[in-house]
Amino acid sequence: MATIMIYFLPSILLIQLLGNCKGYLSDEFDDQALFDSSWVQEGAIDYALVSGGVLTLSPREDRTFGWYGGSTNNAIFISQTLEAGTNFVIETSLSVSSSTGGSPEGNWHSAGLLIRSISNIDTYAHINLGRQGSAFGLPMMLGTQAMSTVNSQSSFRYEESSLPLSGRLRICRVGSEISLLRLLDSDTSGWHAVEYDANGVGVPSFDASTDLLSDVQVGMMMSRWENSINNVQADFQYVQFAEPNNLSDCLIDDLSSLSGPATDEPMSPPTPIPTQPPTPMPTDSPTQPTSAPPTSSPTTALSSPPTPLPTEVSTAIPTAIPTAIPTEGPTAIPTGGPTISPATPAPNSVPIESLSDEFFSATTFDLWQDLYPTQHNSATVSDGIFTIVPSGPTNGNVWYDNSHGSGFTKLVTGNFLVETLVNVRVGNDGEPNGDWNVGGLVAQSVNEANNWIVVNIGFQGASGRMGLLRTLGVESKTTSDGFSLFNYSPDLRDNLPQSANAVVTARLRICRVGSEFLMLYMLEGSSSWVIQNPLPAHEPWNGVDGMPTFRPDMPETLNVGVMTNHMRNLPGNDDQPTISRFDYVRYGSVLSLQECTGAMSFM
Image (cartoon, rainbow, N blue to C red):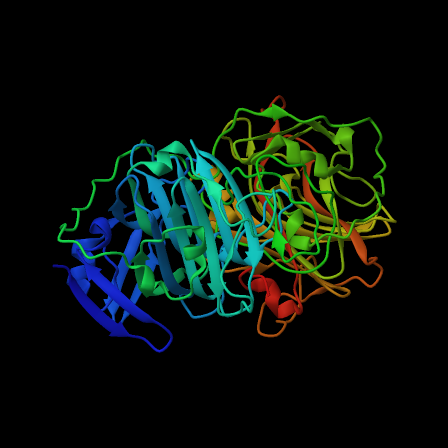
């Protein structure tokens, strides 16, 4: 006989059938020893703590991972084994937050349920709740993601949710069909399917791949694709299994009536997890489909591979603390004609976060405007890195007064925060040592090419105008009607006695609120933003060193993106190109200047 244990919760009666339902075990998370013995745990788990009827799951902060394609190394999965031919529905009730209790802060910081083939670990399906990242035209969204992955090829769809991020999720397999379902606390229409691709909304099921009809692992999953200031955390209230007879049973609110006949069959032992070679994780977003068509529905579609979105802006923010920049084998990007004057494309109305680019596909490069094509020898995208090799050296290849270096931008209207991670070098690994050999960010008027601001890192030249000496550091510059004022950070070699490449790697930001701008940097290995003001002497502003730069002449819409200079080489390096390598460019919105130094997060 099966042992039946009945527990009462405020919202649902759960029946836990030990040894029932072909060997899988529901869990109300009131016994750490039972949890540890019943579930196979894999991935970068910091802790999985059972206490007071809640499983609190937290990932390691020194790893980034996620469930997408074949890049699942370190991804968290806590599972049990289900046999081929078993109809099942698994349900959980969970909440997902940052470790401090707010909304998740990093892209693809999420948790939920997953089914994975035992024979082919690159075939799986999942539904999760959390912060869904923006990439290649897809807006960042707080809500659910439903995904189907077959042989490392993923298609997925988002559906938005109101705060708090809490509620119930299900995966249901009946015969050859699988449904991914949600009933969040903010939902008002009952259980419904979340379509994993763009073929329709609310389709109750899809045909499972052959691998997902054989023996599978089913259970809880977690993604932490990016770093952030605060970690992600998930609290699971329970996991309940039941045996549906048809697809309609997947939508029954109380699963206790579907628990199936009792059986003396013992529970199956945990199945060892197949191993696979580690897959290098990208520094931010996965190699994802490029776009989702605009829709009035709250559900955002995404499947592989759609068409890229056009460029432009509104208000909200992405983020992360990046990892090291990889090397690349570049794919050449067309650079356009020889004109030196920036064009002025009409702005499009899309969410600001959709302008972000992680550079995992050369096709997304079509969304960037090449302001000055003759100012670079090459512009390539490969392996998640955008590499610019400026032309020159020449006195005209520099953002200074009426001159301009290279620039790749998108149209941004209103308040914004833009961030990049950039590494600047000479040749393969040399420290930049020629005057104004730099890479960074630019915000330029669409109407007046000689009104702009920049922040960059690299080798800065001596300036009689500003009384500055040559230095390896960060420069901020404001230029109005072709006249530039600028300032340098302290020499980085004095502050960071490490390798040359580490010294010239930094996260940079430009932040705009109304007519005020801040230029900021964070050196590799640091966790603090520094305001780099273009004027040498200012009193602290709101407790932060550095006053905002006041630019009432700047129009509402600007060209905002990345820039490079290559003005001159020092003797002995005449044939060495300066190379700027950008790991990502992320856009978001702010409401006040105080937010410019905080973690990028979506409101």
